[in-house]
Amino acid sequence: GAGVSQSPSNKVTEKGKDVELRCDPISGHTALYWYRQRLGQGLEFLIYFQGNSAPDKSGLPSDRFSAERTGESVSTLTIQRTQQEDSAVYLCASSLLLLSGELFFGEGSRLTVL
Amino acid sequence: AQRVTQPEKLLSVFKGAPVELKCNYSYSGSPELFWYVQYSRQRLQLLLRHISRESIKGFTADLNKGETSFHLKKPFAQEEDSAMYYCALVEGGYQKVTFGTGTKLQVIP
Image 1 (cartoon, each protein chain N blue to C red):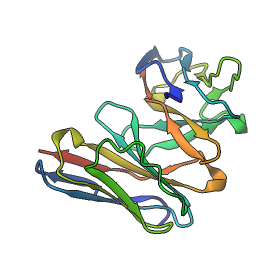
Image 2 (cartoon, each protein chain N blue to C red):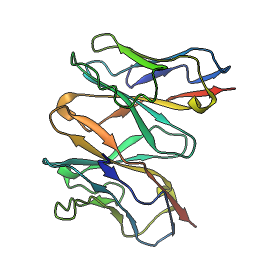
Image 3 (cartoon, chains in turn brown, cyan):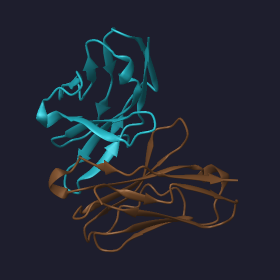
Image 4 (tube, rainbow over the protein chains, first blue to last red):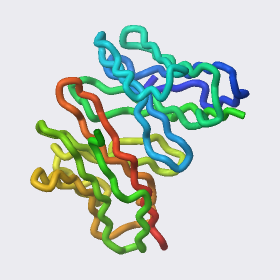
């Protein structure tokens, strides 16, 4: 694919359920980011993967949030026991190390927790 | 510690008026700064980067190391400029990108 792909584009779930959000970065991009964007708010950093280095998890809001990345490919963001305040658009972005700062964003996964 | 500060959550200007979106940063090294834009129903995308010293869609941004600022400017706002604008800083070493909280620009016809 030409760009960053995220799935699902929309997810409605009940409070207390677990959800998984998937991100397919641009092939060859070593860096991958997850951000959260609440309605009317700015970008909130969640987690950053860079190659084989240990991920920067400093933005994860609670231990209900976790993310994995297999090598330099797909990443999955998991939210356990979802709460209503988790409702947001979850954005994934990837970049090449040598072009750091130029992030390519997906269209996001809109999560609604009822 | 807040690395990137965008003090205005919302900026409303009339069409044809000058625009300045403020961004201040905090970084001890040599900064790499960027502006990103998100138009309604579109992906967040790179607008410009300071090292290129370019003008994109009439926007320019100058890095002022003395004032630790990277304000985005345009002399005459257009309605199509209405969007959310984010300032971003690349932190050296780990190459992590940190965004400000964003400023919504509203251009009034």
